[in-house]
Amino acid sequence: ALGSPLQTFRGLLRELRHASGRPYRDTPAYRHIVATFRAHRVTSQKLCRAQQELHFQAATYLCLLRSVREHAALHREYHGKGERSPEEVAGLVGFRLPQQPGGKG
Image 1 (cartoon, rainbow, N blue to C red):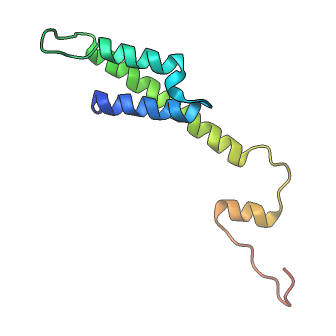
Image 2: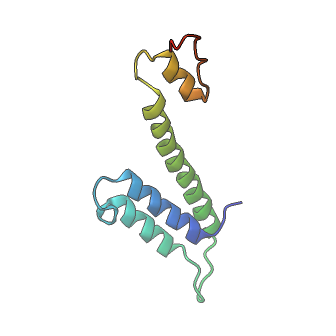
């Protein structure tokens, strides 16, 4: 269910790119993620017992970052626009208002 550690790593970098206003490679978060993944990788000389734990924590953090970004997008789209016309509200939910006879509306 976790996927590969490389997919999780790339997903974290993608979310950092979305979250950062400046180049994400200059951020302390980027340096921390890269250093942590490098320190916990499996090599031919050692087997890191904490790799699965790190991968689980990274996947959980990735889920949090995605959820926060998607929540903010939904909040921007649907919140705080004030009073809406009936036509606009119907369009939001995928309906059209019926046309009145005589060409009105």
